[in-house]
Image 1: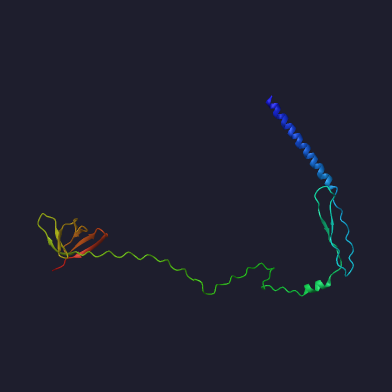
Image 2: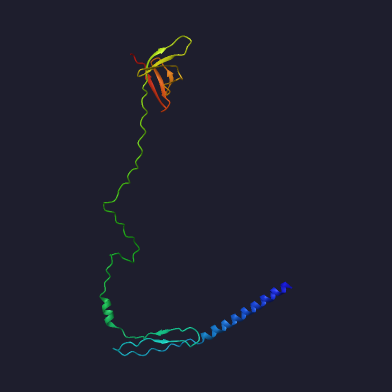
Length: 196
């Protein structure tokens, strides 16, 4: 029974909306027939002031609509035309009827002509020279070759692959020079044999 009750309320609601639509349509059609009729303008006598505009209102039903009727004077006013004849067009000289672009003026000084080059960071300083001096060999048969290195008053004895002064590694020993690597700076340097 619930289904029938829902349909019944929908039918009643639809009927009420339909009656409201019919009433509003009748109201619209009845107000269309009562439009104001324009009144002819009164003739204007030369030299007299124009008559004030006349305002017409619709009947009491509906909103009030004001209609203004201007007087139409067919006479030319020559003084007004003469004053407008002396007006000259004083433009920039460009023909407004030709579709052309105006040239863009070039800037006159004062502006930057070049972009400043970005400052590059200075290159890193070269690694410091290795302060060791190579001054001799120590070799015995059956033993690896050893060299004597001096740094100030200190003397170091080293073989290939050993680290001296906790910083310098002996890479290769040659008869007249030795190749040393600074393990802190990854710098390799060849130190010649010095006679002292």
